[in-house]
Image (cartoon, rainbow, N blue to C red; front, side, top):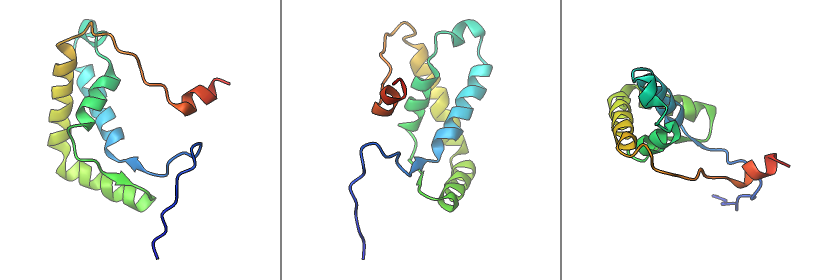
Length: 113
């Protein structure tokens, strides 16, 4: 029997996209290759979001699933991750003065109290 439950609003979700840390590391690597003058105009979070939106999601809900998804990402998506990050850096560089307001999540507000 399959039981679907409604998530509790204050509960942290027990799933995660296994590509997030790999894309984050690739953004760091590629930023290190750029001049410091250029890097100060690049928002890494925008590059990460850009890249993740162009890659297939690899969600996991267990340690075993996480390990499997990480292995898939490292062996089959390495080139795609590199290219998606490179394209993200180019897209962000096109408009370095663009104003954006960061997202604030409910849990971020609650941690201030």
